[in-house]
Length: 155
Length: 334
Picture 1: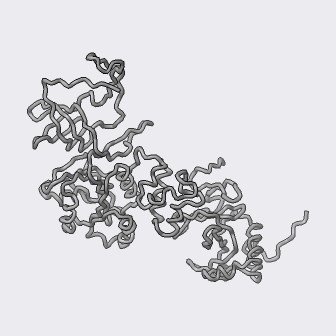
Picture 2: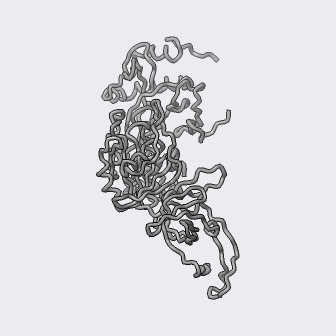
Picture 3: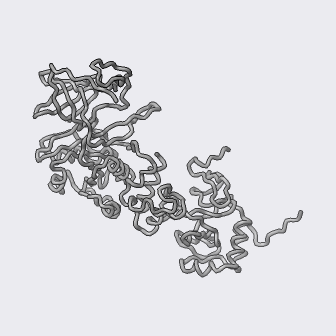
């Protein structure tokens, strides 16, 4: 497939510089939100996903993980959809975004690990977002890898 | 420098205003008379004369250049014509225009020509229906930008006020334009609501009605001038309520209370003509005050540059995000 940054939807990641395709058969989502390699996003949406009304256009860093329970409700509960929490490095806005099927699971795990060492949980709670904490490690691994115990690769 | 040959003094030229045009035929109003005029072939060409000796009595055409217009004459043009009698004549010259409201002509070829919708207009009247068809604010932004580029004021008119209950968000959406300073007028051609107030805005001016098909431009004209009896049609059935392109030609009408009103066919698309990307922000009145205050000064594209004053104004709530998005969309087309 020939990639073109100018075609509708495809973009060049502003953080790691990789050309990212927005093709649905790769991502499994209708609106590609973030780079599947570094998980960084761009602050473009204001009121709804895909509205492209935000003038900030700052880079959004993945700061944590949460679970989407039901319609427009973000709540910590087993069985919900795993979501990435992004924070704009320019204006500080927080947003929750769906994980695409081709997102790097080891990067998602790394975001979770780094969120445990940061104070993002208190900030997210102010916005009503309950982020995954250390006791949710099993839930995360089941979502990412389909099992709780992760086999260590032996080379 | 070119020297124009003197006009033939045996046939006195007269001056009139173009009120109507169809293919190859122009209706010119002059001194209360109406003439059907054809076009002199000289108007379609630009003759380049010798410049070697400007005082020479011999004028020789050096080069003939085709004029790059879809039509060299627009409604509202003041033209010089030769009266051939029996209500007929020939347009020989287009007098200098005070203003032009233009768009790129919709053509199939690669070369894009200018289509002057109205010449010498005093104001632009973008018309949108409260419902059926649903207003497209991006199209309104295009009209407003084109009017600003032509140096003309705009009066936004919302028709079908009796159907406003179908679109409860319209007040909130119109507030964006009200805050910028554009006058907004609401009318209903069915009930006559707001028609008298609109007449006072149109009095003594040449106004141009623009809008997509089915918004009620000709119905509004019929409501303002009940004797005209122009042909109108209902929009198509269904949720979208698309227009049926009933009006197919440009025609200007003399208003009995003073002024003129140009009725145009519905425009499905409206491109911007001869506007440079760098001057686009200046055509958004709410952005104009922020130009030059960016970190990169006049070189700022107002897109992703750090320290952009316009983006900051959007984030601070001083510029509506939808208008900023319109700006970015239009900039992407130029």
